[in-house]
Structures are given as C-alpha cells and as structure tokens.
Length: 306
Length: 248
Image (cartoon, rainbow over all chains, first blue to last red; front, side, top):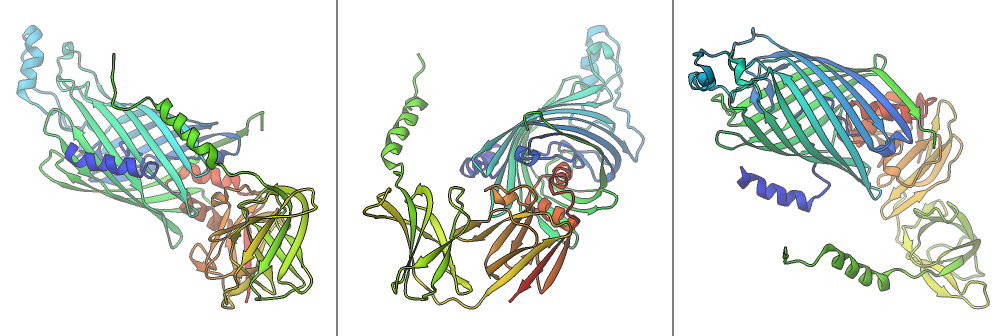
C-alpha cells in the first residue's frame, strides 16, 4: 500500500492545495464545500433530501453485492468559518437481509472464540440499513485564492452482530471516524479542489472488533458543461489496511447533474467504478447511482455585525 | 534532550524577515501620470486605465504635451509611483499593459511622477463593443482581464457598455448589485473569448438566471448542491435575464 501512497504524498506536498476530500462518504452524499466568502456574512441552514438507487454498490470499499435504494437527509449549518452537518440515511437492498449469525457452542467464556472459528466474515460489509453521520468542519482562507477545510466526522451504521452470543460484548452497529483536509484553489476563473482523508472503521459487530484504516487522496478535475447539465469528474486513490493484506483501490467517478429550475431539483447520474482487490473475488465493480436532491429547507440570516 | 537536524522554525522566519526587509518595494508618492507612446498615434487626449487598483480612479484622461508623443495628467490623488500597472485607450483601440517607472520631477509637491511607456504593435482590428443589460436595471461592476491587464470598473448603471474589447482574447467578469471586490473570479458572470458558457455572443444573446447559476456551479468546482443554493441566494434577486449585445 505505502508503495503507491509514497509518491502520492510527494505529489500532494508539491501541489499543496490542489488536492484534498475523501469520499469515504456514500456515493449519494452531497458533500458540499462552501467557501466562507460566498456566505457574504450570512449564516445559512440547509436541509436537503436525497432519494435514489444504486447498482453494484460499494460501502467503504466493501462491495454490498446487491443493488440498493436509499433515502438520505443532510442538515448543514454554515456559520462564519464553520460547517456543521448531521446526516441520516436509510438504505434498503434488493435481497432479504442475509443472516450473519454463526453456529455457536455455549461454553461460557469460550463461546465467542468458538463462533469466530465457525465463520469469519469480518471482511464483508454490513447489510444495507441506517447510518448516522456527524461532521464538524472549519475553513481557512489563505490569501485571495486558496481555501482549506479541516473536517472531523463520526458515523454509526446499523449492523447485525456476528453472533447471537451478546455476552461477548458485540454491538448492533459499526463505528467510523474520519479526518479530512480539503482545499480549493481559484485558478483562471475556476476553482480546482482535492482532498486527503483518513478513515478508521471499527466493526463493533464482529467478535474480533476488526478495524479497517483507509488513507484516501482525491482530486476534482475541472467541471464541464454538457448541454444543460454539468459533468463533474473526480479521481480518488485509497490505500486500505485491516487484518488481511493491504490493498490499493482506484476509484474514478463521473457525475452528470442537471437542475430543473422550476422544481429546484438536481438530478444526478453517477458512474463510479471501483478497481482493487475488494475481497469478493472480483477486481472491478461498476458502481452506478441515480438520484435526485432537493433543498426542503433553506434558512439564511445575516449576522448582527453585518 | 531532543535533537534535530534542523534549527527551530523561528530561525527560518527571522532569516526570511531579514532578507525580505531590503527587498520590500519603497514607496514613491506622486500625483502625476505620464504616458509616452512610440509614435503610433497622436490624439489630443487618451484614456488611462489603471489595473487592479483601488487607490486611483478607474479611468482618467491625459492631455498631449504640445507636439510631443507624451501625454500627462495630474490625478490630484497621491499614490505610489513605482510598479503600478495600466493600459491606454485611444482612437477605438487599446495598448497592452505596462508597469510604471518613477521619473524625477522638479518644482513639485511630490518629487516623482509615474511614467508608462508603450510600444505600439500593429494590432488586428479585433476590437468590439459589448453592451451588458439586465431585466431589472440592476447596476453592475466589471473586470476586464486581458493578460497581464486586469481592469476593474466602478459600479455602473445598466446597460453598461464596454468598448475596445479584444473579442477573441479577453475575459470579462460581471457582478450585479453591490460593488464587486477585487476577487473577481467569483463574479456572477464570466464572458470568455466572446462566449458565455461556451455559447458565442453573435449579435444578441439572452442569458437566463438558471444559466448564470449553472455556470457559477461549473466555475465553483466541487462546491456541491448547497453551494449552488447559496450562489443562487448571492445573485441579485431581481436578475431574471441578462442580455449581451456585441457590435463589431
């Protein structure tokens, strides 16, 4: 993993500011980067609803193995240089929830160990379900043209415990902690941006409390207008380490979006292939998603000093 | 005790400060601007356009000194005579941009004047006029970017007419409503090489509000849906359509 990441870090240091945002987020998460100068002294609260479906889905670099439908609610507060987000998503798969329970032999404290020997599925993703995400971000402007965002986040998603032996202390959720630096640079009338992020997923629903660490580098390439829509190309490279061998994942994406002005709805069609040893025997996942987002509540108010 | 191959950061900062001090540009206060043309025109007056400059007026006229190829104006406004950038308009055309030199001046309150010297390259007749109007007569500010020139105009009433536009080369940024700031990249509208969002301005082009927002989204990079909503709130609420007309 580090073989690939080392030159990337070198490139990052050379192009500081040109790269920065990890999409450890769901593909449909409207991850906004709002330059505080664009707020023009206002505080803005936006609640946005996202509804759609995704095929060949991947959750934190783990293939779900099924198509899913999702509803996502993102509440964002932009205040001064801060951005606070609370996001909730519900994801439902096409297949019934597969049981992750394993045969266990109740022998007191040995139960957990026996279950683990019976089946190790810690590399598999959780079943589609609910997820809550909290993000706290702070923006820094460097001169006239560079804006940097520092973000920490915590996510909790439902997961069926690996064994019925709750006595082993297993939870019915998994935790994710994230730290991320984004940067946007204004060049020739456009803003170029990128990100670097670190994610630590702790599978509290597994007996071994498996941890997966991911370092992600990504960049948004210049956006293009196509007919009445906008094409957003993005390239992302991740290095993942957990209990198994470290793997590298390459994940470009093309997001074509167009706005229906009268309805205030943005429609997105995303193609985001994921290439890497994802642990399910395949190396390439053709992840696609179609969704619509709509701002159900926009509350701008001007601060007293302005 | 912890050792390091490198001295503490403070040493570097102090060294940078010591090096930077003698390099800092000295200030030479002047009020007079002088233009020297390379015998390529002899109008009685010409218009001087300072660049990225909040200190000076956005434009002023200079008068020819006798039969010489020198024009001069007293701005009556003290400014630093070293390293200002400006261009000149005359006879329907324009020069490129040049940096000022400080020239000694005798018997004056300020002992210097800012002199700009322009070589006159034969330019193709690509100059056009562009009129920018909007449905609600909202005033606007513009910045004209013809590298290395960056000329900011004061806020003007609608319609606004820009003359001597280098049609295939120039970028024009337009901001509606409150006076625009020097960070013009984020202005409401970008007209680039005679096109808006890739659409050529042939004669007349009407741009809808949704088109402006879409182009702001494109220029804003990965801003996202909320950034688009905020941009929509920033664009003057009365702007529904913007009309662009060009005359060759």
